Image 1: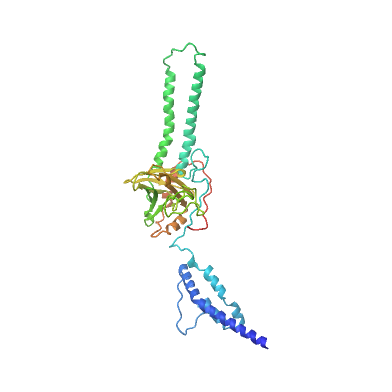
Image 2: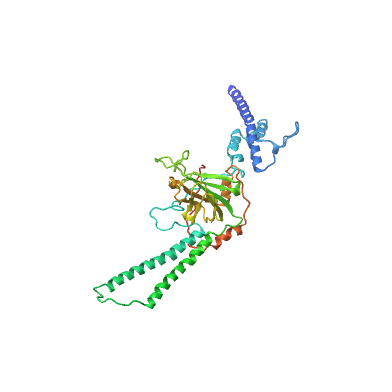
Length: 400
C-alpha cells in the first residue's frame, strides 16, 4: 500500500519536473525555431488571438509537450521530450550554418610538388595554364632540341678538325681561302634556325599580352616593401594584405604573423603566406599590377606568369588557372633588404567557393555573372599541350 502510494507520488513529481523543464526550454526553443524559419524563408508564425482555438500544427513542440502531459498515457508517450528539443536546437538549427550572405572559407591544402619547387628537379615546373603548356612545349620541343643539335654539331666539328687537320695528320696546310658552298650554308642555316625559333616565340608573346575580355574579373596587385596587397574592385573593392609566415626557430620576419606549420593547410616555408590571393579557376582574370615604393615583380612559375610592378604605372596581363590548387611564386626583382621574404600564394577555387570566400570579407559582393563563351575565348586560342593530371589540393576541415 505504502509502496504504491510512494510510486504514484514519485510519478507525479517527475511529471511536474519534466513539465517545468519543458516550460523553461520553450522560449529558447521557440527563438531557435523562429531563426531557422527565417533563414529557410518560411513566414513567421502569427500568435493566435486570446481565447481562440489553436490547431495542433500551429503548436510549438513545448506546447505540445505541455498538452500531452495533461492527456492520456498514449499522448504522453508521443510527446516530444526535453532532451529531443535540446538536440533539435543544437543539431538542427539552420541559423548555426553559414548563410549565403556571410559566406564561408577554409583554405585549401596544397598538393606536394604541385605549384611549387621540387627538390632535385631539372627544368620548368609543371604548368597549369594554357599559355604555360604552350610555353613549356616551345621550351621542351623547339628550343631544347635545337640547342642540343647545335651543341653536338659544334662538338663534332671541333673533334673532326682536331683529328683530321692537326700538324701530324696534315703536315701541309691547305691554302684554300674561299668555299662558296660552305659560306652559303653557314650563313643560311643560322637564319633558318632563328626563324624556326621566332615563329612560335612571337606567337607566344602575342598570346601572353592579349587584353583580357571586357567581362573578366579584375584584381589589382600592389607590391610593397615587403608584402603584397590584392584588391578586388569587382567584388566590393575590399583589399587583402599578404605577408610571409614566420619560420619556427628563426628571427621574426613579420610581427604579429603566425608561424608556418601552425595550420594544417600551410605549404612550404618561405613560400606560405597568411592571406593568399584567391581567384576563380577556369576563367581569365585581369591582373593590374603596380608598386607603392620600388620596382617589384609578380612571378608565379607554374602559371607562366611574370610581370613587373612599377611605381606610378599599371601593367596589365591575363592570368588563367586550369585546375583548382595552390600555386606559389616570389618577387623576382631585387627590391631591398627583405626581397627574399615576399612570396606569392595563389589559391584557385571553383567559382561557387570563390564567391563564398568573397562574402567572408567586409563589404564583399558577388560580381555579376560573366558569359561563359566570352570568358572561355582567350583560353581556346592558346595551343594545347600535354595535359598535366595532378590532383587538386584538398580542403582541410578547420577554418582559419
